[in-house]
Length: 177
Image 1 (spheres, one colour):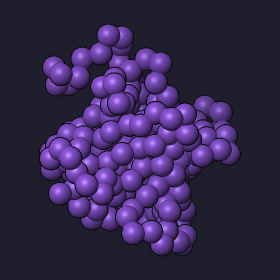
Image 2 (image 1 turned 30 degrees about the vertical axis):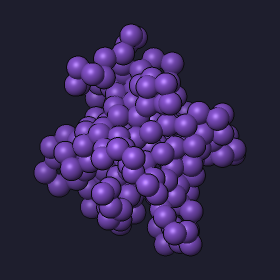
Image 3 (image 1 turned 180 degrees about the vertical axis):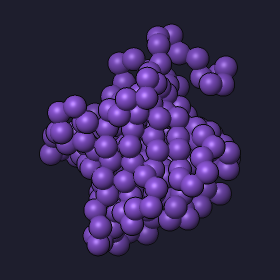
């Protein structure tokens, strides 16, 4: 992890890997011990992306992601326990060269996603520069594979959902410049 991303507490590392040879967007999330902790399942033949994250131990849905269709810019909404918790969108005017996406949370917190999208190495921070997560791409031969670091006290499923959406936007060709 880059030195400027150091956090006062500990970071929990997850490995997000797209399942190979699926026609819908499915991912598996493993912890650092290699154990599967979450499954991400996409919906086939659905207008707009619709994904759900399930806790592997309980089988319960912990987060869902819906693409807002028929909008000028790509937008995704995040839901937990049936309530919308956030919306991510590409920033209309990019103030800084490497600051591309903004996440408006229902709590009033505004998160920024910035970094190097060509190298797929970026961070999620709030308006006070507190780290919410760091996402980087790992080399994988046939499928997408990401490392997601989440500080203690931050909702890991939400940060993982952000990583999934960023992968969806990349696949859909959303421009970051």
